[in-house]
Image 1 (cartoon, rainbow, N blue to C red):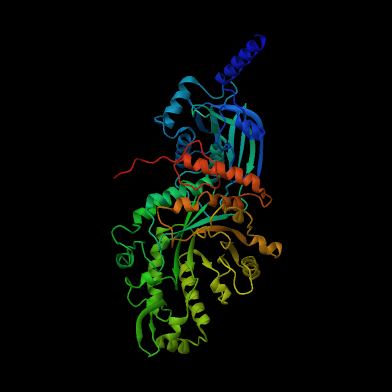
Image 2 (cartoon, rainbow, N blue to C red):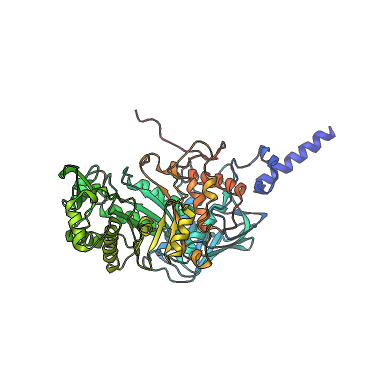
Length: 566
C-alpha cells in the first residue's frame, strides 16, 4: 500500500510538471532516455545546419510564446526584413496537418494588447538589430557580409547583423533552434550563444533546366531549400544542346524553335524575374549560365548560320552541326546583342560563360574554318578556341559583367582576364581535381570547385559522407593560392532529373555541401553531421520540401499528399 501511494504521488508530480511546460532536452541525455514514452522527438530537433562558427548551448530550456510572439526590429528596418519576419513566423508556428490562421499582424496586435515580451522564463520576441540600411530592393552580391550573432537567454533573444543578409542567415538559424512538443502546441528553445559567418563567399548550387524542363514553382522550392542551408548562389544552367527554354525578346526564335515546347516549356521574362526576386528576398544570387561555343545545338534552329556545318569524308556537308562558328563576325554581333539582353535580365555582376567540352572535330572538317585560321594566323584549334573565348569575354566585360568559366579554356592555354573565376569540375590528365585547383590558382586565377559535388551521380546506400570529406582548399599550395579559392558549388545535372525528382534527388545531401562551404574547416565530425542532417531533413519535410531519407528513421511530420486523382 505504501509503495502504491508513493507511486501515485510520483505520477501526479510528473503529470503536474508536464502541465507546467516542463520538457527534457533529449539532446543532452543518454540514448536510453529516448525510449521513454513521453514527448521525445523522433529525430533530435533544435540542431542547426550548417554548423555555426561558434555555438554554445545549455540544458536550460525556455518556452517560446507563440501567442503574441514577435520579431522586433531595433535597428534599420525595411520591407525585406518585415517580409522575412512574416515568413519566419509562419515557419516557426505553422504545424503541418492543422489549420493555420494566425498571421504576423495578429501576433503583433496580440503583443501590443497584452504587452507580452518575456514571461515565466519564456521568449516572447526576437529583437533584430541590422546596422546598415536595407531600404529599397538591395541585391545580394559576391562578398556580401553575412555575419551575425544570436543570443538567447531568460533575459531575451537578440539577433545582431551589419546587413540584411546577415540577419536573414540569423533568422534561419533561430528557426532551426526552436522545436515543438510532440503535440505541436508548445515551442521551446535552449539558451544559446552563436557567433557565425561563412567560410567562403561563393556557396552555390547548379540546376540544369535544359536536359529536362523544371517548372518555375519547383525552382522556387529549390531556392527555399538553398536558403535553409545558407547557400548564396543559384547557378541556373538554363540552356544547353537539348533545349533552349530561355525566352529572349531580342531573339524570340531561339526558344520558339529551340525549346521542347515553345508554349509550355519556356521561362518567360516574367518567370525569370519571379525567380530572381524570390531568391533576392532570401539573400541568394542568381547566376545564369549560357554555355558556348559547345553545348549549343539548341541555339541553331532559331539562329541560322550560328553553328558550324560539319563535313564528311567526301568534302561535303553531312547535315550535322558542331559548336558555334568562331570565324564569322555575325557570330559576335549576335552574342553581343543576346548577352546585352541577358545582362539586363540577370542583374548579378557575374555571368557563367561555360566553355567546357568543346569538340574540335567539326571545326577540323570545315573548309571555311580552315581558311579563316590561315588568314588569321591561328595555328591550331586550341588557338581557335582561344580566339573565340577572348572575343566573347571582351564582349561581356564591355557590358560591365564579370565572368565564370569552366576549366577547359585554361587547361588549353587560353589567357583570361585577371578577375576571371575558373570553375573546376574534373581531373585532367595526370592532375587530380585538387591538383587542378592548385594549377588554376598558381596561374593567378580565382577558383571555385564542383569536382567532388556532382550529386546527380548516385549509388545505393548512404552516400553523403564523401561530400563532407571534400574541402575546396585541400591541395598543396601557398597561402596566396588558397586565398584565391572563392568557394564551390554542388551540381544536379538533368539527364535523369526533372521536376518529379529534382528536390528529393538533391536534398538533404546538398546540406552537407553547404556545411563544408559555410562552416569552419575544423567542422569534420561525421557523427554530428549525421544527427544534424537527419534533423535538417525532417525540417524540410515539415516545410513541405521533398528530401530523401538518409537512413532508417522517421520524422514527426511525414510528407502529406492528396488522395489519388483517378
